[in-house]
Length: 156
Image (tube, rainbow, N blue to C red; front, side, top):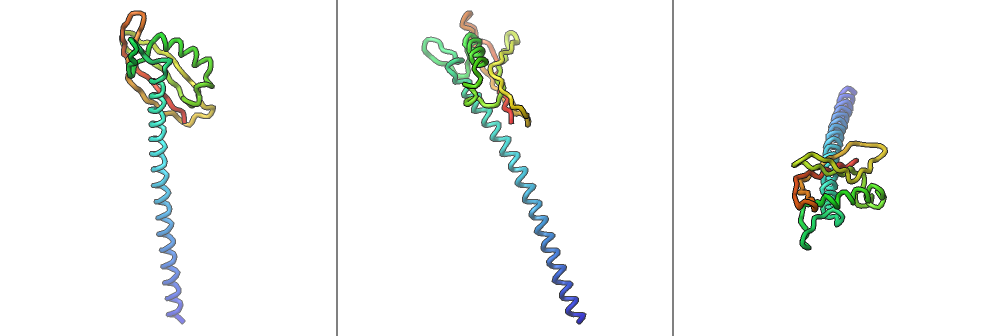
């Protein structure tokens, strides 16, 4: 009788240890998956910000063009002023391209001027990811180039 009770206790103890190990494995697996999901989500958001900034840089409404040559990473200041009013008057037309984001251009040199191009925020903000791209700003009136930064903030 005692040997049967001892063997039954051993079996119950082994099963308890087995289920505890399975529980620890499951907890570890879910924590790893959560951290992986967060990293992948952040990477997707950054890639989306880069994609949107590339789309903005290739908008015909903004591109520098002189002598029928389109310059890369350059925004015409006159076109920027005109596009700013067009985009702000019709944000729904640009929502499919730009989504929930805030896009603005800052002239850094020779004077600091901020141009807000697009701002469409979510009602519930779960954070944002910001990216910055150096660009050249062309003033067609004076034929001068200035240094600027394109800021793209993506809302999650």
